[in-house]
Amino acid sequence: MFSKKRRWHTIKGQPLTEMDKRVLYWQNKGKTVPTRDLIKTPEQIEGIRRSGVVNTGVLDEVAKHIHEGMSTLEIDQICYDYCTSHGAIPACLNYEGFPKCVCTSINEVVCHGIPKAEDILQEGDIINVDFTTILDGYYSDASRMFIIGKTTPEKEQLVRVAKECLEIGAEAAKPYGFVGDIGYAIRKHADKYHYGIVKDLCGHGVGLKFHEEPDVEHDSKRGKGMLLVPGMVFTIEPMVNMGSYKVFIDEDDPWEWEVITEDELPSAQWEHTFLMTEHGVEILTY
Image (cartoon, rainbow, N blue to C red; front, side, top):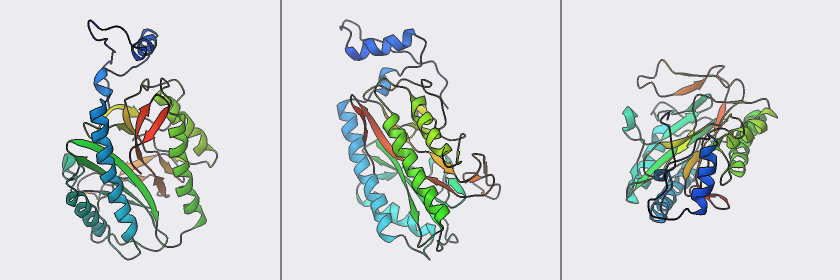
């Protein structure tokens, strides 16, 4: 997504900080490093944190009401009502033509599922609800999986392992480590179950815009990608397929948004927005 060469610039007239020294060390070794605009200020972090509180509230509200027999369009209304009643804006609504305020992705739909009156939740479905909030200009982004009633052991395992992949990826994200460390850890865990990790989509920086640097790939190599520096805010959102990692865009979708597994086996995804600190990541959404 992002190809522009990034370089770290020191502040003229000010002595080098410990952060400057560590970033410059890796830059001089040819590694990809962030620029200062990707390091959020304390004020910006607090703004993103407040946005994350609303975003968490949206998904909590969905959790209270989601049930067999409801349409995904009803989920969209729940999200819109909660978000706007708390002074926020649904970031997805009309984003690059997306027609609704939330993504509702059922079973083999990997992501970007569009809420519809005719999509009725059935016993055994698994569904990802993905919402992004703008509050006072600050963005936060998270998604959760929901199991409708009782499902198969295979789907239950997929949902559980997808959450474990998110948690393991977060544990692998260390200050002055690399984005690739996240994807390596996720891939290693998914391999135990012979699951496919979607390669065509990834996590991303977030906070002042919907999508910022860095790209956070979920199938990568250690030591690859951008250097992770305290003050960076980004999502981790592995898309874990029961079968192949390959996906396609639904040709019947007039908006060309819905991503589906190529073998039409189920997929699961969990997502949080994270702040990188001096000690590891802090979750800003739940």
